[in-house]
Length: 234
Image (cartoon, rainbow, N blue to C red; front, top):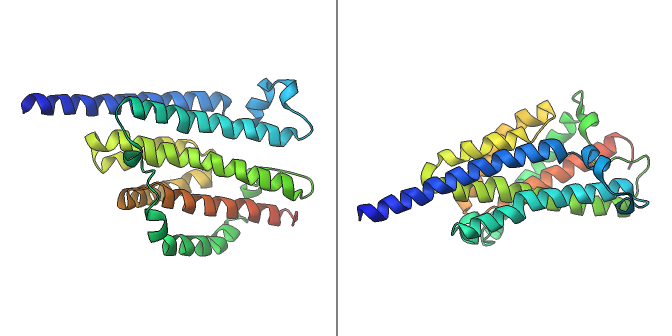
């Protein structure tokens, strides 16, 4: 029995070590390459095309999907962590429908008020244009949705699945640190603390990352659209 416990403890410690090292590597790589302006500098000419801003955003979203979702999925599978552990089960979506509606409605006036904070319109919208182009805007929002999925997969799926067996509920706060570090706009970084805690708690309560992802996506899309409105683009 003691040997089994020792093996289990060893496996948990290895998961914590792998998750911690990989999170640090992610931060280092994305600090150098994670901004569209950095990617534009290394982007081959043949990839740019006429919609250069959309092309670089596609590369940006794809890079995050690779680093925050695809590679972690391979790591998790190699260490015996299943999709259920990560929180990919969808049953909690319907059960959380009322909460998601409340979040979506309540966030609109809050985001609108925050849009008057100095610096907001320097940070948003993330996809900038001189005049509204709805096909390009919709394509960007789809890319943005994929980007946010990679964020939720990593911080509310992969990291909790790797850390919880060893750290229990403290894994929520450990995963919060690199999540907050991904936000460069100070008000957004400060807001990411309570948001990250609430999304982490929702993940723990439902056992699924999908309700948190849909809540995060809803608020993020509202921010983008309200920023476009504040700039007079629609």
